[in-house]
Image (cartoon, helix red, strand yellow):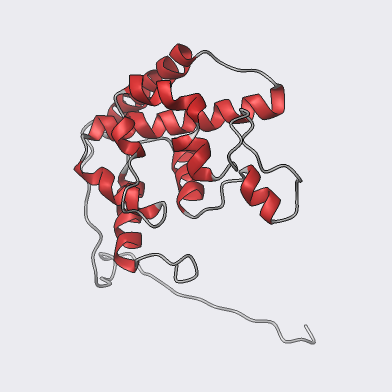
Length: 193
């Protein structure tokens, strides 16, 4: 955290916000990569001497950083505007990717979820362009992000909220009720076997 130059409080708040989003695990993993600056963009791969091209794959001339690929690439301006989530692109006063995530807390829950799925779709579209030389029309990207947000919300409601009561974990250890026992064991082998 210190190496990334993050404000520690913002870093903690960003992680609380990020991991509390009701999105699929693969999208959370994507967001984790985005926030920790390890998303394999051309700028990062170039920096690690893995590729020789650093420019945006859409031909806009800017180096393809994670921020450019997801938020600032002109290829996706229209998609962001029409999604109703363009406020999530606002990075004014932000030193790193954790700061905008903290700002998202003030936004509507469904907007955050849809915006995160939109980011996921934009990243998928970028990869489709690079690896398959194919593109998807903007209206289909928007439909896909909206559908993913809606369907995942319905899925989690059916799976996790059907009469389930969440019991908070105890902060102190308590022995199991009788007649159960808890036994801790450990073993080691000497070098000789």
